[in-house]
View 1: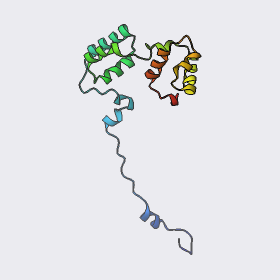
View 2: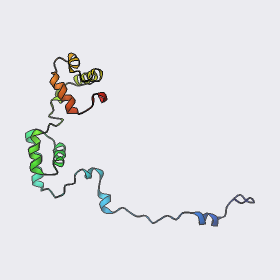
View 3: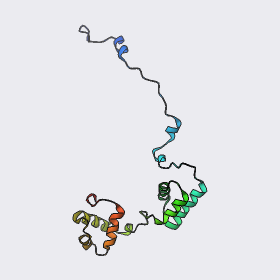
View 4: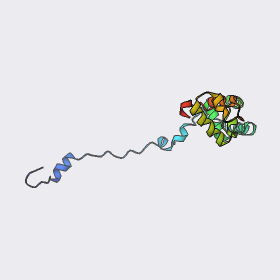
Length: 149
C-alpha cells in the first residue's frame, strides 16, 4: 500500500490477477455414467431374452426379486448358467426364516446377546419358543460381531 493514498492502482491488480482457463466440459462418456451404473458392468453383452428368463426363473422358483437376482448374477461374474445354479443355495433376506420372527423377538434377542454375549442358554431363557440353534444361525447369518449388536 502506498502511504499517500492508501489505495492501489488498477494496473497493480491486473498484474497480480489470476487468469482463468477456458471451461473444459466433461467427456460424454463420463457425463453419462451414473454412480449406480458402475455396479452393472458385464464384460460381454448379455442376451436380453436369457436375462429375462433368468429373472423370471428366480422369481417364480425362489421368490427372489429382480434386484437380488441381478446382484447374484453380478457375484457370479455375469454367467447366467452359474447364477441360475447358485439360486437354490442362496438364502435371501426375504426367504430367510428370521424375517418371520416378530420384531419384539428380534429386539429381545439383540439386547440379550449384547448383555450375555454368546451364552445362548441365557439368551434363550427369555424366548423359549425360539430354538437355540436358530439363534446361533441368526448370529452367523447376520455376520455381525456380538459387541456391535
